Image 1 (cartoon, chains in turn yellow, green):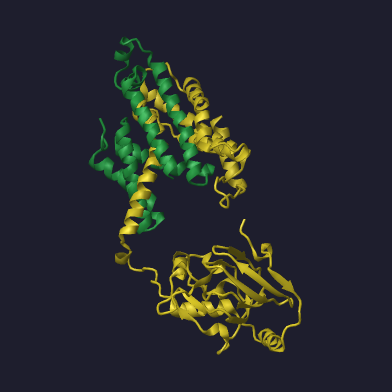
Image 2 (tube, helix red, strand yellow):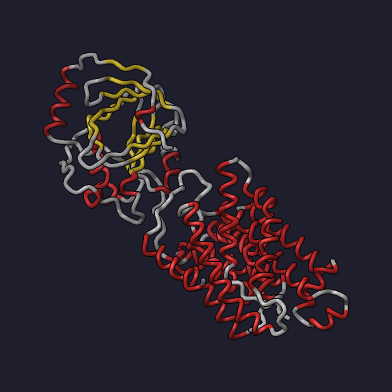
Length: 355
Length: 145
């Protein structure tokens, strides 16, 4: 699971009285919410992706308000001090590569400020589209070469709809409408030197992309070959139109999933161990369901089709019944969807018809 | 993605060796052509067919493991797989494993190109377009008999 700020251990945390200037600033923010996200969203709409914020050692971002889901990644190590809205003063150390996710429900928000108390200068960066995240690590043009990004922030609320230009108001209607305060520290924003996403089709044709596509295609082809070889044997050599073949493949997937998730076995090892069982299953199906004594291939084909339809439906429905919907070996992608009752009854009807 | 690809090539090589170098394998290739001649060679066509069909089901076990390594699986994706399978079979030529491999790689590359340059939703259209084209221009497939 993604780590949040809740899991992060503070280097120092206390409730000492804030200086008067700080209290004033906090009060001002409460009166006129400083929507960090909205502000950046507007700037990005105007300037294109890759808006960043220079952060020198000792520099401070004034109080601002988070309302959108986002995550940040520390690109270099640093140390920061925050004043949170519950009155605490917190100091955190950031390790390079550290990532935290923040989510906000409707109406939820967080007000804080942030001061870079480390020794390194940095670029405080946010709202970079996924494919441009690396751009934040590019040193800025000009003399101060050591100015690397300290943080990369990405708003996940707006990223969750790909292609959107980050109009946050569309996603969070009425949560916050804040004026941009001129002269506020967060308002000084500079564009990072990165390319815009390519738009026209002619420009899209790069050799990297081509090479990627060929490699992916070759790998996909290898996988397709494994999937097709069974159909190739039964349909190509034996003239049996085995439309239930995908059902057996999915059965194989479920078995591999079950053994690797429950017992920690390698999925491919599991499938190799399952080979004899599948062999026997195939032999049994051939012997029982097909009119093997018949000489006419046409008759075999006619008799085979409904049998395979039946196998297809029965396998699918039993897999759904036993294991549930969608399965994945990759963590984070696993969703056990509930299958709609209508789909169920259709399948069941089909099975009964067959029976 | 690499491991499933290599394993599948290994499996294909083993099957190709089995089908062309062993008696049972050659009998499987022969059963589709002339059953009577096969009987005269002292092989039972029904037994041979049963072995061939069982092998074809057994390959599904491995293919299933590759599938779940590559992507999340749900029972309803069977239709897509079936469509791609038949397109590849016809494209490569029925009954020829090298042709099938060629067709699979060709379809894989074409689908990947379509997905990269025009969008993933076009991929099935292209595979079926290819199937139609093959049936119209060269019904026997790339390496068909």
